[in-house]
Structure formats: structure tokens, C-alpha cells
Image (tube, rainbow, N blue to C red):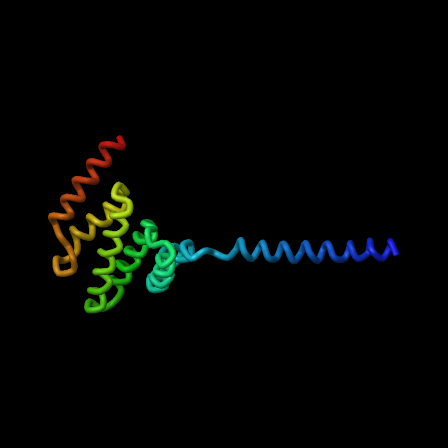
Length: 147
């Protein structure tokens, strides 16, 4: 009887260990949506990145980094499509840059991208040279404080 119990332990323990390790390893290798969205942006799959990043924002609406990457995704996608469709993407680029800057008003990278948008976009798409200059002044102030 004792021999039978020991044999069962020898069989059951490795099986349980394997099951536990397989569950842990699949959970660790599955990327979260934020990581996936950023990876899609970096691999220039902008439409897919937009879809995933929008999902992230439904759960984390105050995530400035995701608003920033989403804005850049919209901007890059706008460069790839016809001008009529690009108008909507340009508007969304500006919207998400503004949100990122509102959430983190001292983030120089977000401010720099916002300034570039205002400086380069045509006025009918939201470009505004006065806003670009104001942001440039703010960036210079922040950089002086940090140095």
C-alpha cells in the first residue's frame, strides 16, 4: 500500500508541476495591449496600432503616453492615405496630442510634437503658428529649469 501511494506521488507531482509551468509561461509571454499597440506603431502598422491603442484608452483614459503614441499613429497614417481621409486623421492627431499635453504639461517630448503639429499643419487642419511659438517658449523655459 505504501509503495502504491509513493508511486502516485511520483506521477502526480510532475504532472501538476508541468501544468503550473505551462499556465505561468503562457501568461508571461502574452503581451498586454499597451505593449502591443506600441510595437505595432514601431513596426509601421499604424491602422492596427490605432485600433489597439484606442482599446487601451477605454480602460486608461488618462494615459498620456498612449494618447501620444495614438496621435503619432494617426499622423503617420494620414501621410499614407488620400488627402480627404487625412483630414480626419490630422484632427485626431491634434486632439490626442492636446490630451497628452494636458495630462502631462511638462513633458517636453509631447510639447515638442505638439509644437511641430501647430507649426507644420495647414491652418484648416488645426495648424497655428502663434500656438507653436507659445509652446516653443514653454519648452525653452522647461529646459532652462532642468539645466
